[in-house]
Structures are given as structure tokens and as C-alpha cells.
Length: 572
Image (cartoon, rainbow, N blue to C red; front, top):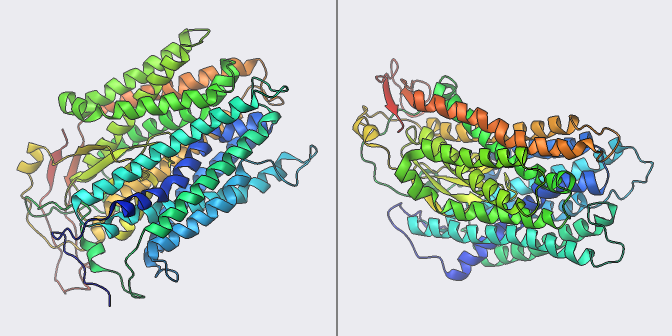
């Protein structure tokens, strides 16, 4: 018989160290494949296999679109599943996702098996497309199910943060492993007598072996996860009440709940668009610079191909270290100025790239600037998004560290775990998937400003479960748009390439330099403009009357509609 659900106040037994370590192993494969996907997909397809610019960009766009579509759909379906055999709901989907990644990812970084020199590129595109879609499907299933296990394995606040911290440690390990292995394979390959300093067809074994090693290591870590992680079984057709209503991190409410905005209400909020544009610009800076840094190093700076391993590693480590400064800096000068400082660092990188020629060992300093600046603006933009949502859920949000994961997001490209402090719900957690891939550096747990607390005495009304899903709409909408925008931006850049019939002509030397300038400095201007609008017109949410007629008809019959006085709150 299933044990009764625990209340939020009862912490339950602590999870053994072995169980915590085995749980953290479950996302290693995702993190490693994500770093390889974002950092090396374009160089592999374009410089190694010799595919055209449009074909390479189209495959990356297809992957982004598949990821954006699969994550929310899988999250919803996974919550309705009953498990498979001895696997629970979460581990069953994790196993299915891991299997998809294992069988598809090696083919993404291997040459087309049936292709010849005379094979048209559209045929190769069709060959790679199914493997990429299967990989993104598996990636999303693994991500959603692994994150959703956290509130099921532990119930105490400390336990949940600790589990995410272990998860973060393995994310760091995965990213360092990818870049370290890349450096080793390229270094060993250059010991051969026919080696070349730049990427080319001779590097096919390097990327193929790299993908196989990553998949092999990921399979071992996934096996450890499934053997060491015990998911509590539930009877078929029964969903635990505790999961529906238990907060991720429990906090006693300081006042009655406010009316919550529905997804339609968010579309009428100007602040929604302010934060969305700022987040979009931030993600474009982070992801596009990550995607094109290898092409810039090899084609514009004409550096040895070993730099495509060392420079991303320096960027990752500098961003990781700078994230430790986010909390004190944010408390000292505030969110807006923290973001402004980060964008100034990014602009310094863009100015250096645009003005200084040639660049030698200074590239390491540039990598530090780009890594630290990208981490700062992404951390702060997610904090602003949390502020926007925080006043329209039962409590604000908890942001858990920056990631080198997918994003997905995620290369080493800074993806975040955004976990709700109150009202953690099954499919809402799944919809947060596109931005959940996280590290566990505890950066921000806002309790709301004094102004917010002073205006928190809204008349209490019984709000059904449905309106609390609106915060998931905000994160889901921003994340899906972010993925599509990045894919379309890559496609645009690829189509603007000045060498339509060659992999790289003399014109591409300047082309990739200006790509790095524009995707950092150019988009940074848009980000600064949006930040100025937020400073002039601070983030304000108008709490509208939430009509409960129809929503509450399943529980009770009411006449008329419920009205609440409009009220404004400013996020400082």
C-alpha cells in the first residue's frame, strides 16, 4: 500500500549520500551532449564535413525548433503516464529519453553513412534531420523527468537545494570533460605526420570519437542513476496529492494570496514585453557568441584548432567564477545596475574585437570578458523575470545557479534552473523545462520589497488551481521564443555568408569578426535600450479582477462574478 503523502512541514528522512550522488549522475549525458551540440555543431558540419552554410544553419534551426516544441509537450504527457514496469513515471521517461540520446547522438557527429562525394546536400540534410529530432526529443524527456524527481525524492527545503547542488557539480564536470576531451583528441591528432592546424576532413575521427566517448560516459552515469535512484511507486491512475500542492521550498505566507494573472492577462501587461525583449537580447548574445566563437577563432584569427577547446573552457570557467559575485553585487547596486555592468563588459569585448587587429594571446582576456559579461547579464535577466512572476504567484521564485547546459539550452552557455518557491505543480515544472537545466549556486531568493509587502493586503479569494499555471506560460513562452529566435538568427547569419561556393574565402575572415561584434555589441545596444525603458518605467503589474465563474463551477455554484480592486505594485 502506498505510504500517505507527507505534509510540507514534515521533512521526512534525509536522502543518503549514495542516493544523492546517483541522482546527480542522471543529467551528465544531457549536459555533455548539450555542450558538444552548441559549441561544435556548426564547425563540424561546415568546416569538417564541408556542408554549405544554409544546410548547417538549417539543421541547427531544426534542432532548436524540435527542442522548443518537445519540452512542454513531453512535460504534460509525462505527468499523465503511470510508469513502465518497475520504473516510476519519472525514471521511465528518463530511461526513454536517455535511450533516444544514446542511439541518435553519435550519428549527429559522424559523416553520412550512405553519402558519397556526388551526394547532394539536401539528401544529407534529410539523413541528419531524424537523428537530430530524436536527440532533441530524448534530451527534453531526460531533462524534464530528472528535474521533476527533485520534489519527489526529498521534501525538506535543505534537501531540495542540496540535490540541485549535486546536480550542478556534475554539470560542471560534464562541461569540463567535453572541452578537456576535445583538447586531448586534437592534441593527439596533431602528433600525426599529416596533421593540419585548421579544421578539415581529417578531423572527422576526432569529432566521431568525441561523441562516442561522451555517449559512453553518459551511458555509465545514466546506469548509475537508474540503479541508485529509487522513485516512490504510485498505483496506476493515482497522482499524489502532495505533489500537486506541496511547495518546492516551503514558506509561510505573510498575507492572503493575491489574484493571479491568467496567460491572457500577461499579453496585456507592458512589463511582460519589456522583460521578454531584455531576456531575448540576453539569450541572443550568450547563445550566438557561443555558437560562432569556434568559427571566429579558426577563420578570422587563423588560430590553431586546439583553441576551439581552450577558449570555450576559459569562457565557461570565468562565467562560473563571476556568478559567485552576483548576489553581493546585486545587493549593493541593484538589478538594473548589475545588468548594466555586465553589458558594459560585453561591449568592451565587442569593442576590442572590432578595433584591435591582429589578436594573439589577448584572446584569453577576451574570453574572460565574454564569459563574465554573459554570465552577469543572463543571471540578472532571469532575476528580473523572476521578479515579474514573483508577485503573481503565491510567493516569489528561487533562482538556482547558472549552467553550462543546453538551452538548453546549454553549451556552456548559461542555462538556469528556475524553481518555484510556492505552488510547485507537476506540469508547471515541466513547462519550466526549457529554462531548467541548472546549477545550484544559490543566487537569489527574493522575499519581495517593502513596497510589495506593504501592498500585499488584497482581499482573499479562493483561486482555483488553473490560474497558478500562468507563470509557467511566461517562462515557457520566453523560452520557446528564445530557441526559435536563436535558430532563426543562425539561419540568417549563415545565409549572409560571403562565400557561397567555398567553405571560407578571404572575405570570411572579416565576416566572422563582424559576426562576433554584432551579436555581442549590436544586440547589446538593444538590451541597453530596453534596460533604460525599465529604469524609466519600472516593472509594474496591474492586478486585474479574476473572474472565477466557470472555473469554480466544478466546486460550487456562484451567482455573478468575483471582482477585486485593481492594484499596482512596482518591482524595485
